[in-house]
Structure formats: structure tokens, C-alpha cells
Image 1 (cartoon, chains in turn yellow, purple, orange, red):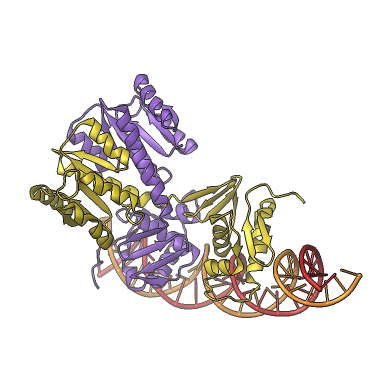
Image 2 (tube, helix red, strand yellow):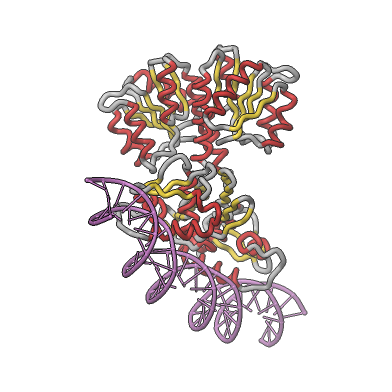
Length: 230
Length: 230
DNA sequence: CCCCCATGTGACGCAGTCGTCACGAAGAAC
DNA sequence: GTTCTTCGTGACGACTGCGTCACATGGGGG
């Protein structure tokens, strides 16, 4: 049940494709002119785009480049469609960052399956959200945290706090920033809760707790570089 | 700089592939027998697998099925490799959930680019911590969950449970799978904990609780399609 | 050297969450 | 319809995690 944008100027092809896509249970949008693409993508936010290279108004390749250079559309998967079956073109498309490449004449069933494959990947992989920072590994999916491959059991609040600190290890995170990010406080509140949780975090981190550095009068910072031993 | 497992029994092909992969800066592992695959994947945790359909010991298709039915390996992208270029085989592979399909003879450069395309997708999407599924929005970063933009307060366990269910809305999640994924139970345990948490989840979801469907004797499934009204 | 203030630390009570159990309801098999 | 199994549900006790407070510590400015 995904929203798919098909961009092609040949009515019989778009019809063929959308027929198959709808049969698979997808919602299907169509555009026939390259200039319509960006506005449509921004407005409709499709889950995937099928893009013909040959287009009137603006050729498909430059449409594709625009999609990939705009941060709002960069992550939308694109399958390229073309009549030229030469390997060089195929490589051009993939090289630019297309997710797949299908040459005409193509089996609409195969296209539909390739679409499904990419959509599945998009969804599955989203869950692989392990972020490694130095000897620290943050596994968002299982909400687990590892230091030198040793699992460390953190509570929800501790996990969030550490996540914010690890998000940027070169910046100092002010007290109000942390209170906002972790606790959702919008205005400055004088509370010792943050201090207590920093303490608990340091305790659980053991040796690694030294990486959590107090910036007096400002806030806290997670410093990766080996902290100066006491 | 990704780890890639190439499974093929033809030395010249594996050599060709690994040469190109290493040139692109990837780390390359090889297996020549289907039986080696599962252990290697579990131990090495490759980022992507290139799998030939024709293998001694165990044919590629059944290796692939095993990879896709085990939750520990389900999310690893697989590119299928085959000598049979017929469309039917192509469809077979994609249908089973391969991420791509390349027929011999193939351009090693094209294969490398397809690999890069899939890896790029894998990585880009990893950073998107918000996953939208139908009217449901799961925000892993802030560990928040929304239904029709209404925030729903979930506990850690409830969040994990729902995350696994939403991971694949087209599959039934068995009781043992859920107990393993959420609670970390490795062997089958007879417990009513799961039932209770399903109940609590349904309560908190309110109307949307209907999407959590019991598959009697098997487990549970999150079904997006509008549930049959009572 | 002294004082002030920011932070560290331990203790405490409340609220929320968890797992278990007993009982009832609902399917499935026959 | 009967029986057996599976699942839903409510209640309960134990435990964990949380925020607050009081007091200790320690750095910096005067």
C-alpha cells in the first residue's frame, strides 16, 4: 500500500504500469512532463518514483539530478526506465544513484516486483539503526547500548540522554538543551533531575563514564578522546 | 567500506567480483558451498550478500529462503546471480524477496554499481528514524508513536513489541519470534506475558487496536488495511 | 583565605510498569 | 452439542525507574 509516482510521456506505458501497480495494491500517481515532477513529489511525497529518461520539457536525467540534490527528495527511491538498453546507459543511471534501472521493453510484472523489492528494503532497513561512535555502539532498534561490545543496560531516560550526548561529541550540550531534548521542557526549569541522571549514566558506563564531561556553568559534553586519567 | 559476502562455486566468477568490489573499497568474503552461508552470515554479519542460484551442497534458492525466514538474517540485502536469464527465474527471485537480480553474463561493473545502489539505500534510510506506515508514525529517535498525528504514550516494552509488528505488516509474527525479538527469549517459553502486552497495546491504540490481529495458534500480525468494522 | 554557587551524591517515596495467575470467552476438532 | 485448546481479561504483588530533596564537595572570584 505505497504511493508511487510514474513519470513518462507515453500514455500506453504509464497505463500499463499503473494497472499493474494498482493490482499489487499500490496507489499510483502519474506525471507526463518533467517540470511537474518536483512540485508533485514535494506535495504528494510518494514512496517511490518510476522515471523515464526520455521526457518532454526536461529530460529525465536532469529531473533525477534535481531530485538527488534536494535534501527534501534525496531519500525517495527512484527506478529509471529507458528505451536504450546499452550497458553504458545502465551504468550512468546507477552511477548517479538510481536504485534500479529497467530497460524497455520490460515485463511489467518484473517492474512491479522490483518496486516491491525496493519498498521492502526501504522499510526493513530502516530498522537497522546502529550508530557506532568510537568504542560505543548505539542500537536504536533494540534500545541497547554497547561499550567495547559489552552490553550496558540503560533505562529509557538514560538512553535518550546518552543519545543526545552522542549525537554530537564535539559540541557542548547546555542544560536547557538536554532538558528540552530528553524531557521536553520548553522553558528553562531549575531542576536537579538532569544531574541525577548524569550521575546514574556515569555509574552504568563505569570506566567509560569519564567520557561524560561536565562543562561548568553550561552543561555536559560527551568526549570521545581518551579522557585524561585522574 | 562495506562487508560483502559472495557465494558462488565458480572460482573465476568470485575472483572477478571480489576484484571489482575491493577496487570500490569494499571488504569481500567468499563462500563456495551453500552450507557455509548461514554460519558465515551469523558470524561475519555482512552488509550485503551476492548469491548464485546454482550451488553445490544446497541450491541457492533454499539458502535464500533460509536467510529470509530467520529474523537474524532477514534484513541483509541479497543480490541473486544466475545463468538462466529467463524472465520467469528473474521473477522467482524477486518474488521471494531478493533485492536485485543479475543474470550471467553480467558486467562486473554493473554488479558493483547495483551493490552500491543498494548499500546507499541501506545507509540513507538508516538515518531516517521516523517510519511511517499507513496512519502510523514511529519515531525511534524520540521513542514516540503517533496514530493520525495523535501521540500515544507507550512503555519501552510496548514500543518494542509494536516495532516488531510494524516491521513487516504482511507477515505473521509467531509467538516465539516476538518473545525472542522483544524479550530475548531464545527457547520456546510458555508464558502469558505476550498476551497481556498485546492487550495493553490494543488498549492504548484505541480504535487502531483493531489492526493488531490474532492469528490463532501462530501469533500476531499488524494489518494496515482497514480492519473489518464490528 | 573565604564565600558563593554549581555540581556530585545518597536517600526516599511515588508512580508506572512488568510478569504471573485465575477465570471466562471463543474457536477448532470431532 | 461436547470437549479441548487457545486467547482475552482483570487483578495482584513485586520491582524498577523517576523526580525531588538535603547535604556534601569542589572550583572560582573577590
